[in-house]
Image (cartoon, rainbow, N blue to C red; front, side):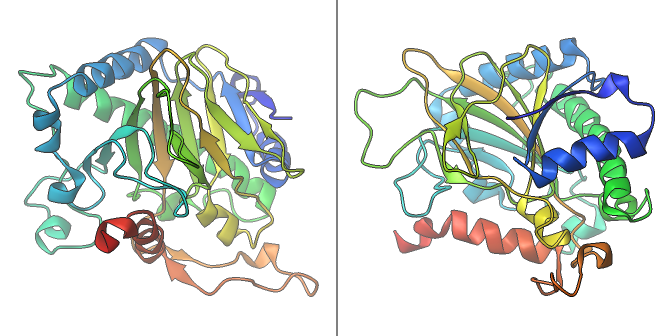
Length: 314
């Protein structure tokens, strides 16, 4: 039910758009091979991730997202709650955003989500920064290619998304799920049921399994686990842009039994000032615009505030 798409087999964005668009309207997930991101780079990102998460808890806490701000830095076990009705997620994460120097005007001016990244000490996790930034850039290029194909499917100019995603509120997120504990709190899991916030997610994962996707009929299924492939899904912002023509599908992660799980997610969100409003090609008399206009930054803030609201309540 989750299609496998070999990108190497397409030289025409129109034909690729038809295939991606079918998946985006149906299950909202697809798995891609032939994406052009080198296996060696993916392997090194996972190696850097494992080294970081194996660090001393106090060292990781010094890089906390609560100190860094702007959705960057370390997220501790239980600190995030993707399903607001459930206990905290049994995972830890490290977020890397669009890399800007500390003296960049948008950083100095305090523009939302435009802070500088925080980084582990290079003496403790060698090559962490160059490796993750190289992977960030590779995912960004791939995400732009997929959007050009989707633009064809949506009936807008192929470059429609180019100037809306060229300096994105994208997040590269390293994730570590410890083995399933003997006892979860009621309703607790590795990542609670949720939909992603942005336009498109590109996920690399190990072979531990655990990702589950909810079908339209309410069944939970697992994407195929193919070495070197990326699991992709439509996010809420693109669903909003397309007036619900494309579907953002709920999913969750269940901690594996007896082993750790690592994954690397790239969330491609629009530029902070990009205007997100229903595409005219997705509006008809029978399907009027469902959503008011917003911006990339305003929408991301709205979603993150809900995810971390339990901090303030606590």
